[in-house]
Image: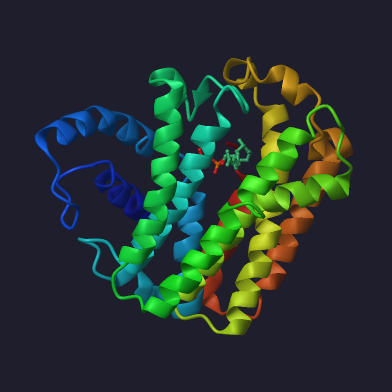
Length: 308
Ligand code: GRG
């Protein structure tokens, strides 16, 4: 996992540059000067750290399908998997930037630092988020050594997962639900879209890039459904357990107080039990896959047993 994180970090560090990239149109001096002031905000967003879970899932899914040779691909310019892993992280990063805005969760801190709109301003944060989203799709079109057919499938999966009937739709349902306590089924359906869809997409994209069969894709998707839900259950548990919560969420506190979570609906012990049950289901989903799926198994355990 550390290696997968390092690969993703290395590629993300190259993505902050908005000018002088091969293949981009020539810009006038004044355009370059204007972009030069935008660039630090993009770099701030991309180099804030984070667990890089979605990129790790891309590499792990590809490994489960194609074996450990996926880790030995040429990395200097970035492999198809590096591009794919970064695309997932760009969509995730954009979603966090927009989620932190005053119109949504109104958070001051993200990943231990001021949120982007606090460090810069709201307009910059909106634009960086929009730009990262577009760049994610651009990366898939530019991924080396992938057929056009695979790229179209991957773009379609990523667009659906991140769009109106995926992450964005889930976020909308969540915001509309503020003040109305959701039932457990409604909560589950909302999270399957808001956080689950992108996690599932990470697995499917890694699988497609590595040439997965339909049966392998179905196994990866089932694994993604269970780990995606487990991720959210654990996030709710950590939210309650975190002693630093009050520091990071002061402004969003009123809205959070009215929200249904796995912990408010099931209690801490009940939520932990569900998380363990989802871990078992994720492991069952990939039990037909051989040792190559061990990184997936390790990630599922990490997602459920993590402390941050
Ligand atoms: C604004 C379009 C739009 C969508 C936002 C995913 C999402 C949708 C909002 C995030 C809100 C949130 C904090 C949900 C809890 C689960 C979650 C996604 C936590 C953050 O993901 P991690 O833990 O973050 O993978 P790091 O920082 O490790 O990358």
